[in-house]
Length: 301
Image 1 (cartoon, rainbow, N blue to C red):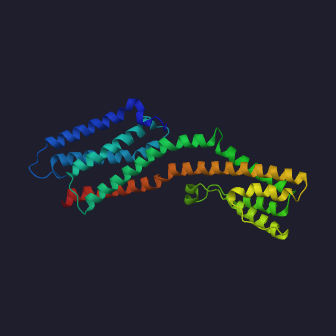
Image 2 (cartoon, rainbow, N blue to C red):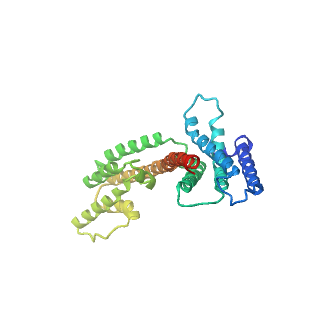
Image 3 (cartoon, helix red, strand yellow):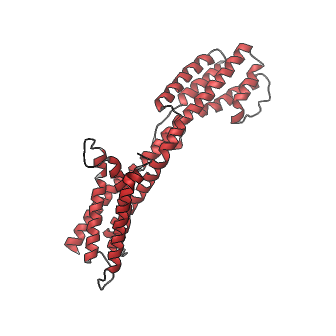
């Protein structure tokens, strides 16, 4: 669906939208009202009626999406028409107004219409780009499968850390507690899972052990932490503990990679959906402004 709605039915609605635009431009150029073009001429009323009907019809797409048993065309066809006729609405509305603007309800309706359409443009971009990125990021796995693997790694890592050192066990436990995938809108858009905060705890544990053993306590960079864990503890534990630590590092690295993929998957989905929280309220605001525009024109103009 995301890759083909622009070319649905051999781009039928693209050609309909182009024909509508050409006809509107031709009528606008041909029309000579004897005054500056505006919405009060017969052409202005005609284009305004077409624009108003288009706005109402475009809003019905939300109803059609949820009418699964409807036989009034496919959802894909409605989406294609929604995109192309919505774009054509820009030109129709401008010609309707005769490019006459002011600080009034009529211009407010135009501004809201443009805001709705341009937010829709972002929606088109999101639905063309992000499904491909989601598929590539998931790498043939579902989000549920990745979450299950993260949970399994957490349990195995915690069990393994029990036999290494108390501070390492605390680090793993804190990593599990900090892994919060999803959350609020800002958290989803940032694609942060919180598990990376465990690195700071690892550095702190190593620094404390170094201080206790008379070491220099040299600050470690985040990228050096996992290697430092092996180098530091290898000289103070037996081979079995060292091997267990290496396995733990592998688990934590795998868990962090998976958590990053899940957070990125959530981010992509959030971007695909969050624009609707702008697009839909603006659409209803536009409908209210349009009704006000019509009432003012026919009863108070």
